[in-house]
Image (cartoon, rainbow, N blue to C red; front, side, top):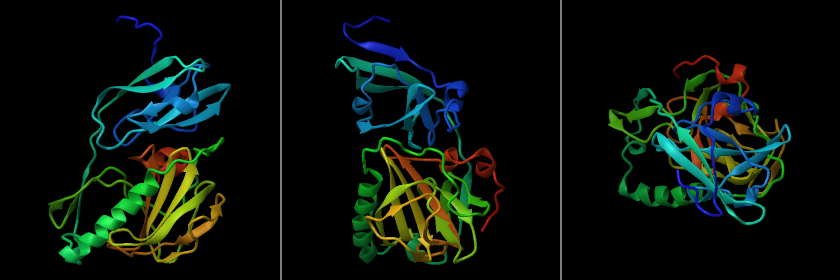
Amino acid sequence: MNRLPHIFLYTLLCSAASVQALPLDGTPVPGGIAVIRLPPDVNPGSLRYQGHRVLVTHQDDADYAVVGLSLGTKPGHYRLRGRTGVNKPLTLAFDVEDRQYDQQHITIEDKRKVNPEKRDLVRITRERKRIDAALEHWSDRDRVVVRFRKPVEGPTSSPFGLRRFFNGQPRSPHSGLDIAADEGTPIRAPAPGTVIDAGNFFFNGNTVLIDHGQGLVTMYCHMSAIDVKPGMTVATGDVIGKVGMTGRATGPHLHWGVSLNDARIDPALFLPADQATEGSRDH
């Protein structure tokens, strides 16, 4: 490989050892994360992955970039770009491995929630822009908590990444984690943050979105009640609402989503191992 002048190229294949050095586990796969140890001369604010700023956290006298990888990411070689403290270009390379997710077939009685009518599409388009704006949100925060508590107790009813079919029709993969719980069960903030949006949406029902800093945003859907408002600051464990089945849902549960640098990733990556591996059941 030719060395270009004034460009530092670090090839860091994100092995299990490098990931486990942080309170985040996993191999870089679609819907997962890449954890990359940064050289000491990097300018953290300059780092970009596919045009998005990335979260940087500190542990054991080193800085790490935590990069979200969307479900649409293809296996292969990728680069995180930035600059050093003396403003020289910097490239950090990593590999993404393949992962295949299971299928899920769901029967929805409300046909409009599968094939919306023309009058619904205006609302859906408006809400999509609103949700996208929240998930793309960036706020500077020196310390971002990357180990979450589970927002509600209960088994996983639908894991992340499932290729979904509603009434036999293929739809987008499942971009969150469904947790089965009784209607009215309190939902608690998994980490400190600020509520950036809340309201009722066509597909998601009653929904809350929380900004945790540096492009880390969580979403809570199908709630029976919302107990927070945009602009409110929440601490870990604060009640933000209650479990329900509003929107497109076949039973009471919490759909919990995590977005990092505008990529929807598996929420279980941020949970302690004993919570991330709790048993599954259909709801």
